[in-house]
Length: 289
Image 1 (tube, rainbow, N blue to C red):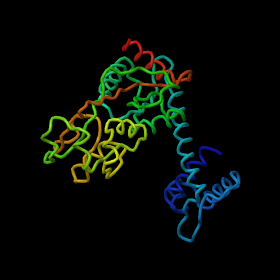
Image 2: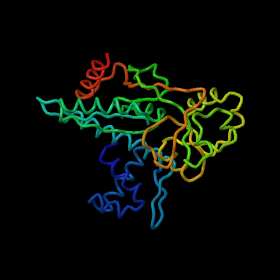
Image 3: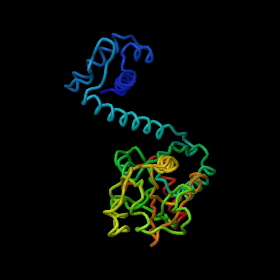
Image 4: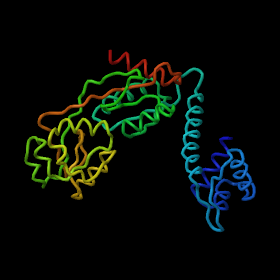
C-alpha cells in the first residue's frame, strides 16, 4: 500500500463520491477508480458499497479508514521529525494531555524550552488516559500527561507535585451549591455525570462505598468541557477534578472525605525519539530533579 493511495482512499471515504473526490485530488475519475480497485485486489477485500450516486464504506473499509488515518499521521510525524536544520534544534514534539491542572506546569516548561529552541514546535492531543495510552503505544505521541489511575509500568515517568482534587461540578442554583463539601449520601439520589473510564469508576465506587448501588448515573463523559455544558442544561451534576475557569455559571464542591488523584508525565522506555523530543525529555528531567 502506498501512502498516496491511502490518501486517495480517505478522500473517497470522506466525500462518498468518486467524481467529487477525483476533482479535489486533481486526478481523473477513471484513474481514481482504478486505484481503488487495485487497492481492493491488493487487500483481497471489498472496501466500498457502490451505487449510482454514492459510495460508502464496508466494515473492512471502515477498519482500513482507521488504520489509514494512523499510517498517514505516523508518516507525517516521521517527516516532521526528520525535517530539521543541521545546526539548530528543530522539529515537532507530540504531546498527549489529559484535562488536569498540571497542564500549567507542562505549559510553563514547554514555553521555557521553546525560548531556548525557538524552531521546535508542539503538537497537542487532548483526551482521556485510555485514549492517550493507545496513541503513545502506536507511536503517535511522544510524551503524555496522564491523570491517575493509569497503568504506567511500561513507561518512564515523572510524578508531578500537584494533586487533582475530586468533587462535583454543579449549577450555582443547585441545592448542593451552598455546601462546603459533598458526601456520598448527598449524591446518592442526584443525577450524575461520571467518567466513562472503568478505572476511574472503580476509584469512585470505593469512595461512594455502600451508596454506590444507589447512584443515578444520567450520562458518562470523557472530556469535562462537554460535561460542564450538560450540567448547565440540567442533565445532572458532574463528578470531576477541580479545573479552574470552566464556567462562571457553575461551581465546584470538593468531596468529603477528600479524594485526590496524582498526575504523571510519561514516555516509552527504550524508544528512539526525535532529537527535539529527546532534548525535551532530558530538559524536563533535569528541571524536576
